[in-house]
Length: 307
Image (cartoon, rainbow, N blue to C red; front, side, top):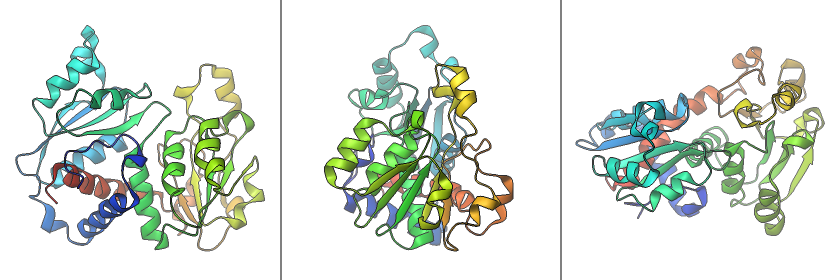
């Protein structure tokens, strides 16, 4: 049972529990009308301490499509945070008004800290460069829909693997499935953190390789997960400018790929995927956006115990 639980890290839930969320999401996709009143009289609180478009909108759309309502803030300047209010006081206040909370924060560990003070489920909607579990659920649902499976796949992760919280969460989640191999494509400065390399991959015997050139491995990939180089995570603008165009997926590179390659991206996109790729049938990132809403509908329903 997931009722009343927090989701801070993808590993908070077992594979069976993750599968139950994905299965419910698939039911919602196929029978949306059956779920439109599932969350009548329920309220989602959205606490977004840093900017977001897709994650915030998809949470709000998910709750509204379930028949519930949404209150919250889209940036801390419109809340008592600007007056110096602490996270525990904010959470205790909001939890007295709502049934479930989605929280995004620039500091790693902030949603977990918040969960210690919350009487309602907390969903981590992204914390710094650390975790983004609902994006991971989105990615899992997308992969399952486009590939028909979550096992026996070669997954290329390209771009900012150091600060990319979506990458860290996806590696943690997909490493639990059989036959999954990772190809980690990045400049040296943006390689995955050592704890991911050691604790998640090496210590568990998960096959992976690290390279700098996308072209060298394009023909071996089942999934290509592109990420942007995140300006907001850099302390030195010169480093950002030097690295921001390290990888741009265009038609020439895509000629090297399998016909059934699936291209994913957590968005926002800057220039790492050329717009000419959007019309290619292998581009799955706009479908990925839709799946994000459906999987959040399923997650909210599970945590509230209404499905």
